[in-house]
Length: 70
Image (cartoon, rainbow, N blue to C red; front, side):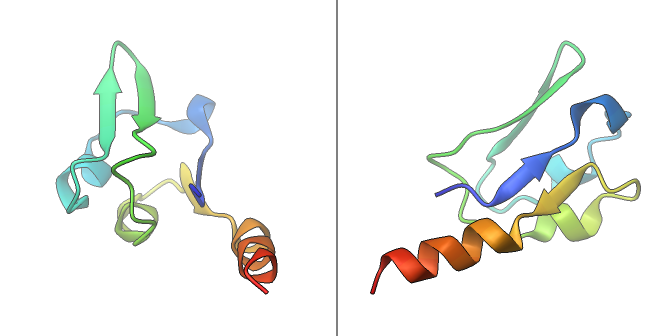
């Protein structure tokens, strides 16, 4: 389950997130940012590296995912 969310209109395509992603799960193409869900491990390194908070960790979705495993 992908827990990283994108605020696409905010992105200035600096590439900070791409550089820190250990799974190469972020693509910046033609003025679009995309997370490749099957590669993303939700480590949130991209979230912490983004200087303008384009990427956000969805805590509510994470909590829901934990509740589903009971």
